[in-house]
Image 1 (cartoon, helix red, strand yellow):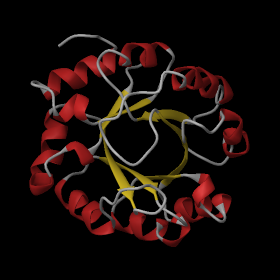
Image 2 (image 1 turned 90 degrees about the vertical axis):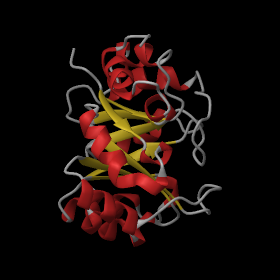
Image 3 (image 1 turned 90 degrees about the horizontal axis):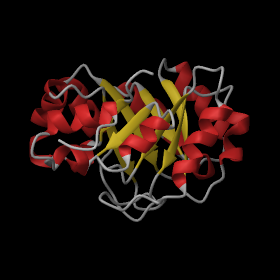
Length: 219
């Protein structure tokens, strides 16, 4: 079984030193850079937009995984791809035309994915499996970093892996990842793991990433 890809959330980095943060992620052997975009409407918090993604792209050649927690993402997906996003994910319930939004992203040459909140059943993803490159599960309700993982989401990893069997669709999880619960996620076949504090607040971030990738529980 291949190691899970680790996508540290840049939201947990020092905003005054974002260029250094992405350079460090490459040095620490992270795989992707996860960018949480919040609009203060779909979720009760505001983070950053296209200019931040553009600035990150200027400072790294790493894969930029841009998660849109915004109302009507179709208004902005093309601009996020132009800014440097390699993958754009969004919440289908926030869009007036989720399938059209996926087509817009792909037409720009980026990968596309949908995101399921903890209270949304996996069945919602069925119609999207043939259209997307990735399905992301939220391990917490979106809006703020540092929340505790909702244990019921663990079973949904297995459900989605079963649903996507025989396809190239990746399963990603964002929210509440720790060194303690990561091994179970790895065991269930998770493909991409978003980690914020587990990486950026670790005494040895490179070692933390290595442990998360391989399902080890200690530094």
